[in-house]
Length: 298
Picture (cartoon, rainbow, N blue to C red):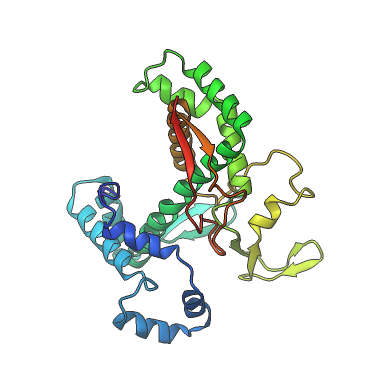
């Protein structure tokens, strides 16, 4: 987004504080979102400056859009083209696979652009950090796994300059056990306990159930990840397809590069205060309570 939030330089950074509040799910917040009628929420959001309305991120998104439009960038060209298409009433068309039908391609308006910016901010804030935290916890509790990962990293990266493209490529593609550790962590601790998808055709059959267009289907990701009937062995944990995670590759890069750096330099071990199992949040599977680990330089 071309925005420097300086989140790593201050514990009282407003961006970090507001983002962390977004992941604190209290009964009052859940009740507010699920039970309060939309017209009441819209009224209250105008007058109540609380963490539930996301006004901070809305203003931030507005500022990002404004700044990018004033710069000579591809974003400026993209939004200018979209604005021109809307004004002139132009409709982009594309042929389907049978070359027999046409579809309208809708451009994004300002509200949709800002909604996506807010989604990128929120979705990328906690999920990757939680995956790294969960990975370190599991590696500390399973020293054999940590030792094997350390050995494979050293074998693959011995003599490789950490600032080189070779280092980057090796960490991301040449250490299969690092990938296995990351994906097993995601299996045990999926960032979201459930996913939702909306049916886009009428009369879709899901087993013995008939689904109608626009019905919402809730997918219990956490339960599926622990069900041997569906996933008896290694699984691919981030969904693929037209609605897959847009930040999947970037998140994988962050986790792999961070773990490779940490495991090669430090050894992680449990202490007397380290729990046997992590206490997780009830909605987003983030760590609900802090926990200690012993960190020793290798």
